[in-house]
Length: 318
Ligand SMILES: Cc1cc2nc3c(=O)[nH]c(=O)nc-3n(C[C@H](O)[C@H](O)[C@H](O)COP(=O)(O)OP(=O)(O)OC[C@H]3O[C@@H](n4cnc5c(N)ncnc54)[C@H](O)[C@@H]3O)c2cc1C
Image 1 (cartoon, protein in one colour):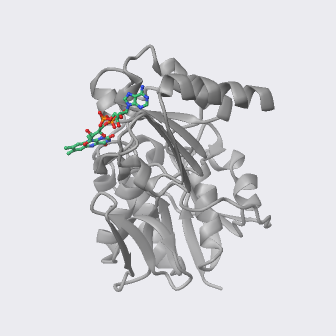
Image 2 (cartoon, rainbow, N blue to C red):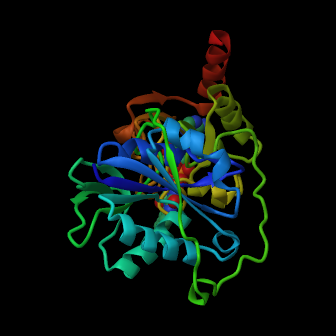
Image 3 (cartoon, rainbow, N blue to C red):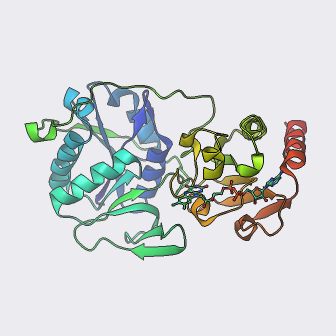
């Protein structure tokens, strides 16, 4: 069976959830093979987890260059690996880095590329959601192999333990891949909540929440559900919540198992970032709010009454 290369994303020695999703998806297309890039020593803590999710091979490219020069060295090494192993497909996360590596790879190999894919059929046909979520597109790469970047939460990660063979990859790159140097890294302050793009549950607040202080209600419900917190652009622009939590066309795209929209009207630009959520719950005092067209479960009511009641019920059941 031909290999399907999955470019691994990891932080602090842990494989990102999106990579486990990609390995799960890769099993439907061929034999999953993970590709780890990083400074020397990066792969050691990742291999077992990658094998647990079905990686039969882990290609390891380790060099200070792969850590110190943004994505160009990764694209160069990946292009060389692809030429060597002729994979059935290459999958990357639809993250900023994943998309940039994929774009560079497509140019280097003169290969087609599909980004922001939300589903892939066994024959490589990909599904994308376009034009602020109003159009579903199915397409295939017709030049070369399927080179796809896949959105987080598009697939439910399922373990399929394998015994991984680790193969060292030549990580040497020339000077053209070393033009942009990483000069400093600043770790983003992270709370105990799951990362918005990866969370299984997202609780978002909109302008209806009415103040930054009131967002404590949204955070409380999120914490009871083990969820990430999101916000509409109106809430962000009003200063209720920081921009990195904005969901929508000009914010993050999320696709959790459960999305709870509280005091959010459901403008098309907001929907663009959340409408592929598996189950959508809306709380809004206006029964005509467009969010109810999308919701699987809607509560018409004042959020300042409904949310504390919901929180109380969840607390009772814990
Ligand atoms: C180019 C462009 C890009 C954009 N990108 C984004 C984006 O990425 N994300 C995004 O979200 N928006 C985006 N927008 C803005 C978008 O058009 C909407 O203005 C925005 O989503 C509205 O946010 P909202 O639903 O919180 O506010 P509103 O539309 O003002 O809705 C507030 C809702 O809260 C309800 N409400 C009020 N009080 C209560 C209460 N006490 N209890 C229950 N319900 C209550 C109201 O009935 C109403 O439905 C973009 C717009 C443009 C033009």
